[in-house]
Amino acid sequence: MNLTINIHSFNNYYKLIYMNDITTIPITKEVREMLKSYGLKGETYDNILRRIMKQVDIEDFMEWQYKRLQEKDKFVSLDEI
Image (cartoon, rainbow, N blue to C red; front, side, top):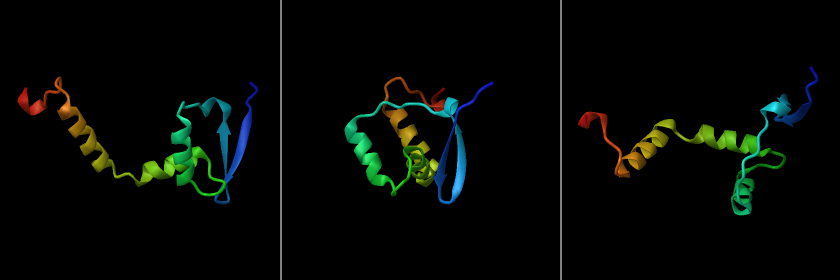
């Protein structure tokens, strides 16, 4: 089996990324520029997104998701069943 491997350096650590693990996410140029503004020099989009996601408090995120669901007409709370 022949695997192609890319090696990226980040904070003096080396990370192996197999080509099968890389995907493309379509975003607008505006969003790409916004994402770049969150990055540090030499930081990959993958690293930027990982850092941002680690900073988001999971409980705040779940609360936000719950509020979105409540706003939908089809949502029924388990307490109401």
